[in-house]
Image (tube, rainbow, N blue to C red; front, side, top):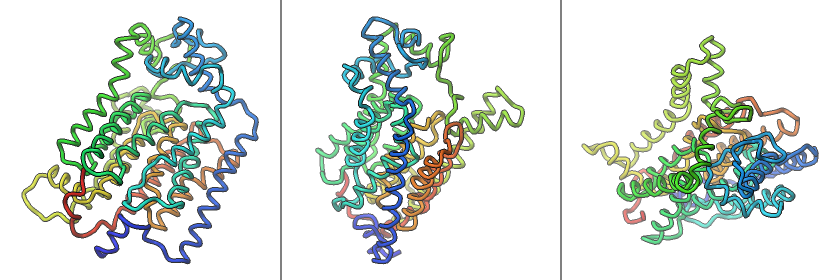
Length: 440
């Protein structure tokens, strides 16, 4: 691919701009949008009982305000589910639960917040995002992996995590500012992303993806330290200011409070760890944890980490002369010389690491959809078509048809196919290094 074509791909409008392709691609986007919105409307019309997670969370906030231990389900009114978040969140969530407004109106509020997530998400090009890009990001936020459908059905506070994730990504990947001001925004984004990961501790490896930002190594390590502090802060606050509740929280997540719902790694969820768990049960090795985790690690490496590493190594061969520099030094140089590609790699790494989580519930696919939304606008026509059909159209049709996703691995398979599609589409980086001095 020529330098001009590559530069156009990363810094300018999408590559496949032939009029005939635009017509059918716009038609596909319109059809997929109708399917996604139709699925949400169909879900609303079913009239089933919804919002159980919102009721649990607000019941825990109310119990804490009344001086009761919210990690004991017996203290939560109207629910048999336990409260999973750190004690520090009990006071943080209180404004959302005051007066019962959230319980009564959460569906409309969540819809607005999900659309806002799509609007806040950054683009990776230097040029300003057009209506098509904004529409695709909102479409992914509302429809990809039916993640938002699960958030809307359950009332899960993943909507707040998604909103904070969108803001963090906007701060980390903002392409309009330069110099120290931009780096200060990235510091704020790293701290906020670390805070988001503290909501569900199992997703903390996502923070490692910050190393792929187009920055000098010292600044990247500084961002990682800030993100680590943001992650640890709610834990420290919980330990120091809520010691008794923190002890109860540990008991709850370990399943050591008798006669109540508890969270286990083996709880039904479409994760690679549960794939390994089911596999060893099928071959008669039940309760063999070392083998279970070995299979899980092998699956994560073979399906996610190794393909990502191969793409990265292939990219390192572009624009870097052979020499005696170490691999980290070559990587740092390449990332700084290709800032747009580096930010794309960063979000791809976040997507992959999130997907490797040992516990990724159906509603968590909403946050995964936000990483997809950042990446989807720069895909080629063929890759975009694949992602729209696999990530949005197929799940929407299945959901409308009443095919349940819970307890199955369909969402995991769909997310993996999208990941591989985006990796295969990662090409078109300019053959020569971009000018120095564009990194901040």
